[in-house]
Amino acid sequence: MRGQIFVIGIGPGRLENMTVKAVEVIKSCDVIAGYKVYVEQVKDLLEDKKVISKGMGKEIDRCEMAIEEAVKGKTVGIVCSGDGGLYGMAGLLIELVHIKQLENELDVEVVSGVTAAISCGALLGAPIVEDFCTISLSDYMTPYEKILKRIELASKGDFVIALYNSRSSKRTDYLDEALSIIKKERDDNIPVGIIRMAYREEQEIVRTDLAHINTKEVDMFCTIIIGNKQTKWINEFMVTSRGYNI
Figure 1 (cartoon, one colour):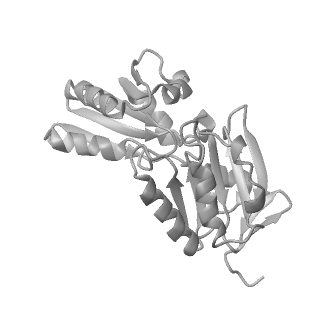
Figure 2 (tube, rainbow, N blue to C red):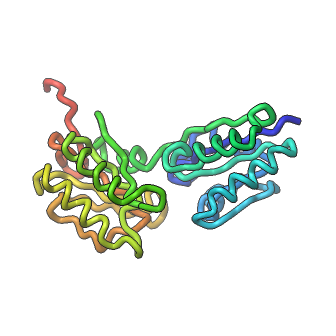
Figure 3 (cartoon, helix red, strand yellow):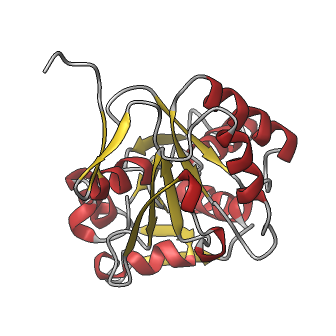
């Protein structure tokens, strides 16, 4: 049989927030691979499937092992938080399949998922109604200088900004530096929403503004959405006006 690999975005991680196709594809797989936290989030769908679970930083190993299973004729699913094409495994897998010259032996399909900017935006209301950008503050794969430059340009362009991987124990000052750049272009009263552990029992939502972000309370489980000059709070809703004549 011809092997197949799906890269599956599982959204925030709870089954009700996944796409119907993502659930169906996971059920159809013989093997599931992924970061151990993401595998745990879909454990109710795994039944008697073979599971390849690795820790953070083992992305190449997971893809290599998934490819090995697929070459045997297995249907393999690589699960990713949010969307597999955004800070996920889709690009890496496709590159490895190409390097190994396995395009004629394996089918690869990317199954989209709901990324944190969209899922967290829904919890806040409607902060993203026009052009926006996502920027990860992790310099694990991207030079820090490039990250800061992207923040500067996004701020100058008045994009709504969704910050991923906002703060970790090893990157305690990155968020403060990012905010200092954004504040050069935006007023202190620009709305900011901080969502921690979105759609999980521990979920927390902080509604604030640029002047009052407590960066010490932010960790890797947080997504931060920073409004642009058209963003405002309407009661508990964070809303960016698109420009309708109302």
